Structures are given as C-alpha cells and as structure tokens.
Length: 160
Figure 1: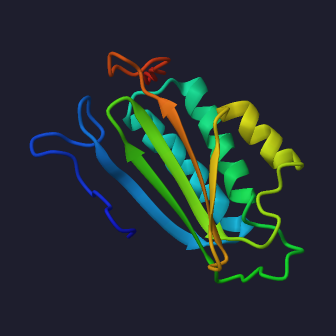
Figure 2: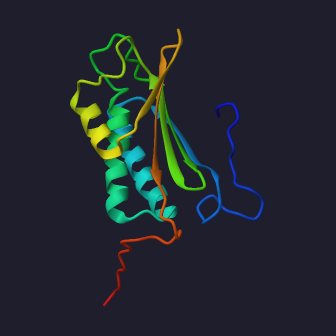
C-alpha cells in the first residue's frame, strides 16, 4: 500500500455504489506480458462495478493494457522479470481513477511510441510522474462516472 491509501469508503457506503469513494482494488503483479491480461480483466470488472458502459469499459481495458506496456520494454537494461507492476483503482465522487506504477529507465515514458498514442487517444489526459533516483514511474488517468450511477449498455442474457 502507498501512503494515505484509503481502503474503504465512508461508513455506510460501498466503494462500488453511488456515493461511495475509496480504493476499489490494488493489484501487484510481476512486470511481464503474461500478467497484463489479468489487469485487463480486473479493469473490465471494476468498470462494470461503478456503472460504466460496456463500450467505455472496453476502451479503458485497452488503455490499461497500453499503460502497462509503457513499463514492459524488453530491450531496456532495467528489465527485471520479478519487478512489480502495481495498479490501483480508486472511486472518486465523479470518476474512476486508475494508477499504474512500475520500473522505468531514462527516457520514460516513450511518447513517440504506438502505446502512448493509443493511450492518449483513448484517455486524453494522462499524467506521468517519475520518482527521482528511484527507477520507478507512475501513470495516472481518470474516467468520469455516469451521473445517475446507473450502468449503461447493460447486456442481459436469458437461458432459453
């Protein structure tokens, strides 16, 4: 956990319900390609839990995928198969904030690469931060939540 982490919303509210705020999930995984699928799955689930449309959840899944790829440069000398990649999903009053943190080297982030272009196209405002002398970087972005707190584009399946 990071300093000042809030793991639950105010008493009487759940983070996934309208009005609830706080940490929805923290995922720490090795910074390798094979774990990125888990990050996408968690993103889809949490987007549904906070009422996002299916189409916007799909966009955020791709954005998380591309954000993770910013930390997975296989040619970089700092690449360590056991290095942690951490994702945080926070519910704020009007947004879902997603934070990805992992190992970085000089020249990070790669703003000239395809991953960055896709990330900016899907999200728009992506904030990055480099820990001075620490070899770690953070990407942060947020997505507005539905004003009424009711999920949109709900798919209903019925057994016949």
